[in-house]
Length: 90
Image (cartoon, rainbow, N blue to C red; front, side, top):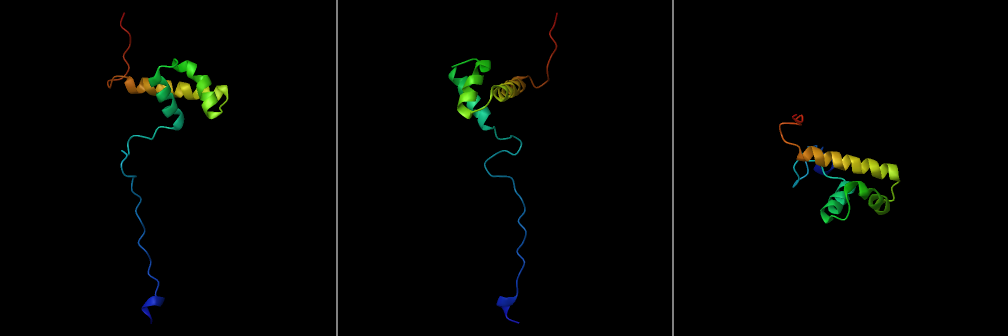
């Protein structure tokens, strides 16, 4: 039998995580990147960012509000102390 006629199966590639990015940190979405830049610029408070999102991404008001609330919650959770939320003292 001719060696050229024998089909050899190729080894199956094992999926590996993408290089250059830590696997435990998710990639921020484009809305969150936009809000981060807007916040850093100090142009508006973050609840005033809704019209900016609506214009930049052609979103309706409800969707833009949801995205801003999601971003604010994410920022709050990232700045929280590692021990968890504490109750206010009286």
